[in-house]
Length: 505
Image 1 (cartoon, one colour):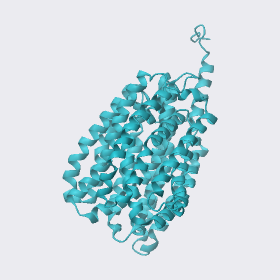
Image 2: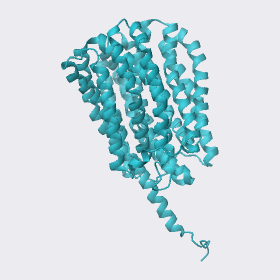
Image 3: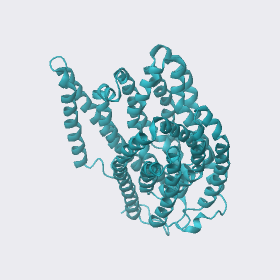
Image 4: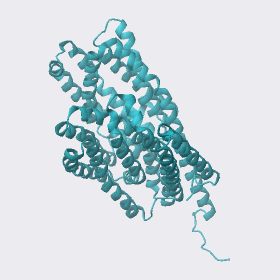
């Protein structure tokens, strides 16, 4: 019997394979848990629009609109002071030794607090300028209340980022995205009845974020090995700071780049076109939000794997994550293809013309899911500088495309410019991960999902073309049922064959 004899202290091959299988299964289990928690988050958020409508009704459109404008200003200011620590902790925490996972957390909080206080002071002093612009002198106090919420907002982001680093998705879904916005709207109602007819909303904003800080700390204490002494500043690790600065700059540039298309449309088209484009973003970004919901858990898992450079595990977990995201995005894309004009008509009259823009935007979003997740691999391997370079490169591509395409194609030109600008960087990610890991990261399950989606789409298209001349009003609905039957049956068949099990290639 031939074969290599393990060195002293080296585990036997079957033990290594078993450990790899256990790690892959743990990654897959956490990804599935992330999906389930996100679904729970959607259920929690259902109550928020109702409470927001009630607050809008009580405070009136003017006061509520001024609150929204002030909130947008505060959001930009908060992004400046958080210094990228919220997302850099996704990478840092998984790579630390047991018992030292939260090294640097106290110092990160100290940095954000000091910078947040300076930013808050600037907003506090500048509140009268914004109030005069809005012709509402009574809103100065409310704007200053909003400024006081900047530091608690930064604390929540950093604390939730630390929890996400321990694969605790519930911290984001339940505390940051669930409790805080719902509490803001809920607290605004009794404050209005207590006589705060103008400043109740800003005060509710601050109180909700202070409660959110308490909730985030409590969650960390209950669900992780976090101890209160981890909040003490004991020096900021240089690797964490080096990683955070490019992430911080990337977030700031990306926030501006997300407004570039709207600014270009405003300068080159009519207000009606800009309004229709807002509807396009509102509907089309539903696909993007699905992938974005996976970002924290995917980056955390890949960061842990990247520290050990276990490329077999990386390939398995990456393929599993890509398959999960695609399997949920593809049906939504089919719905947008079939019903985007009807969906837009619910928003308002005249928006049906923007259906083509939604299809274009959603199509690029689907393509970016297949290729763009490779950017998370690069980030997980510690190359946040390349993430910053990618954002700059995308912005440099997007600006001339907007200038060239909007005058001739209008709204559709804007969606094409945004989509086309994202293609080259994502292709670069794909080939760069091959260079960094030495292997292509797509497993068999990714191809199976793509083939299933394409085949189901062709079946739905055949049904739609066959019926549109005779029963046009029912063509989309029957085609949707055909797609659901083909796609749902195919997913069940793939599940039975085990192609979605952890480690399947």
